[in-house]
Image (cartoon, rainbow, N blue to C red; front, side, top):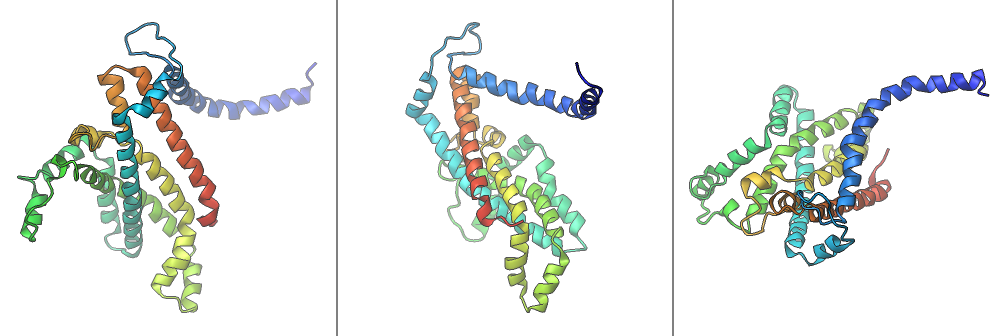
Length: 297
């Protein structure tokens, strides 16, 4: 028979349980159940219309290894990540440091840098598509004006299209990460800089030995977020190039979309999604494994 003490203990859990219950239900409906359903579907030939999908085992996964289109998408995505992450972090860090030292225009510049992040991705893609137009776009007009006779054809060139998309993605995203880094910089105790000044440290040395170590937890979080974000790029590719020219800008999420909703191979697309999930998980685990070597708390 339950004692009064144990009954009171159980009752004490009720308020906390009720508080987390809505979040738990939403997580289960929108994250956990679709994740499990997608994993199960990756072992079938489900096409979106067949009521009873057939179990095909690991066939979808073995096909991935021989699918040149998928391998190109994977390569493009890694190139995108290798350029997008450092460029975004460097630009965000530079802007955050600059804003921390600019008092008069800080609010205006902070809003200006952050504004692209809250602007519709489709609007941005269309606008930048016009700017990158090799014939009538102002970017090539400026390049020709400064003496570059044969500027790139940007979105019409298989060599330059992916770089153009990366530059737009960096421009759109860095303001968001700048806000995070600016908050991190402003949280660094001022007495650390005063002690460094007393020791004769220059501004660069203060940045190197005070700002960077103190900011390393924030930089680590920004790095994790940008890497995950880089593997989710879709809108820019879909609107600006539709994966072309050729297959030069086709990335993983766009390839998954094509297989699922253009070719109606849901099972195969689910296998791609599972591989993408595993890639992000492995990279995140490696990052957290290496965290202790450069993050100081």
